[in-house]
Image (cartoon, rainbow, N blue to C red; front, side):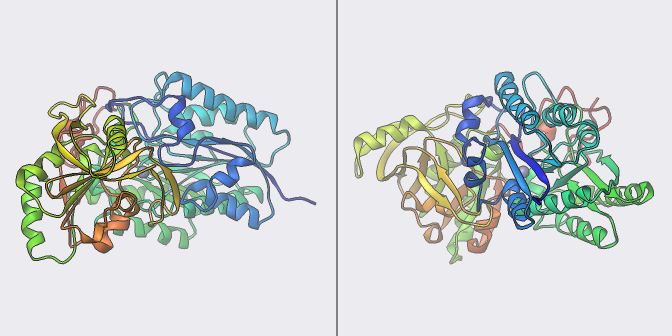
Length: 499
Ligand SMILES: [Zn+2]
């Protein structure tokens, strides 16, 4: 007798509705640093041994002898809206795949939870509802979510359980997939839990959502504690504060055998988050202030000072090509400094034509029409060339095999720049080494990332500084021109009220 028959798939996108470029179908084919779009049995090999929800789910399911029916999995780099074309093509393939699978015992989806499509604000709610229509009200449907999910009532209603990451940097993505499989097992044994969902009344800037620092650390420690007390599953979602729709923002979820148990756990968590409102804050420096401070600290440090170029984080929808931090490094005369990744396929192509050792005058980066940003024109030395293939083996990417396209290390003065043709968030030391830069030997490293870089760079960093150069993801969400949030929500902790 074979085990339960479970359809699996995934469709992941984090949408910054204010970002410069949308995600079309091609962006999902390519994957943006994640595995490329894969269907059928290839899905399982493409996502094996990578730190992702689907990978952990498959590991547990295989160990339990479940009969998996892989449908389709894809992800794209965070950006502006998913195009209507891409959403409909991918959603249709998943829904039709589930329909064609025949008799099933359950469905698992690896989702992000903050997807906005051109024509649908609640991307995951829409997808879950379409899947639910096919499988009927009783078949188990579980989805794992990113910690940045903007959860909606429709998502909660359509899925038997939504189970979210508990770390930012997200080092537990595969672990969340394993927890989702354990919850699926609970559903397969016939149990159904009461659900409780609460929305937090303020947005939290992503730089202060880190779970390695307070207040995140203590808040997240409450989740396993609740489960030890008998709650079947508890999640705290920090939300992604750059999606202009009513359900943008943090939330909590609890699943328990009794309605009272679920409500009590959710209220307790919500209250704990609200109590910490003021603590979600920290220092943010201008580019020049940050660079000068880093240079001063570097004089007495044996390890790199790491700066987060938070407002152009491609993990939040940036194009990873703004030049504000590069300009500050060069103007301040910084020594032994490196910055990455600046995405500029034209500059990379010119470096490949010119060859190692060549000197090139070119306008680098700054091509996303961001207010206050511009290409940085200078004479650069081509220090190395790469085809852009690398394995990111640090704790965040966890072995992801990247293809960043033609890449190069350009140098201006004593500043080295990782230039690539495709974007991926600088969150792994390997993303410097593949063009010959040894991150440990630099005095200053500037990473186009908000928090994920901490997983692989904190161990080598003397200090970490957050800087705000002009970019599409404001360090303070209150700076975004929101028009569709729900009435009364605060745009940042203790910040202005929307509406
Ligand atoms: Zn996330």
